[in-house]
Amino acid sequence: MQTELLQKEFKTVGEAISHELGAQMVKDYQVANPNDVKGYNIGRNILEQILAQPGCEGMRFYNAYNEQGKKTLVYVAVDAAGNDIAKYSIVSTTGQLVTMDALVGDRAGQIDGGFSIWEWLGGLF
Image (cartoon, rainbow, N blue to C red; front, side, top):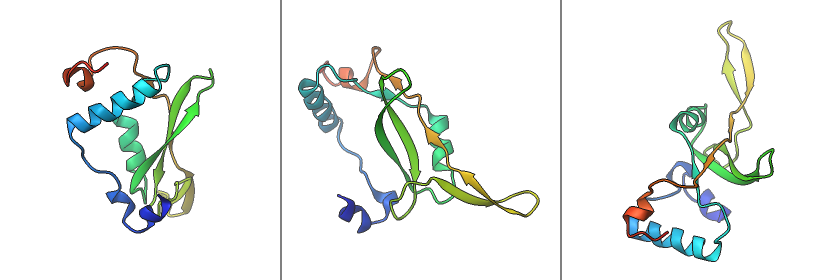
């Protein structure tokens, strides 16, 4: 997998799939893991903030546990070489080169109800 990432631009990783394939993939996972979290909600604001960081070509999502021990996602910016961005440099308003900590996202909301596209595609869940 890592070799595949190095052979193409990181920003091109991923592709659109059909609704039917997406629904089947979700169904297969949930049948195999009925007690796992159904999914996560992540707001546009944090996604845009992470993607707007200098050098960001995409994002990586890590499975994690939050402070209460509940499953969550931690998400970070990734550079063109496929490396997590932990720090980046900017020029301050005073003209100095400053190193900043990159944003790290969390607080994804677990899906525990409500309408989803997967229900619209045939009530798979």
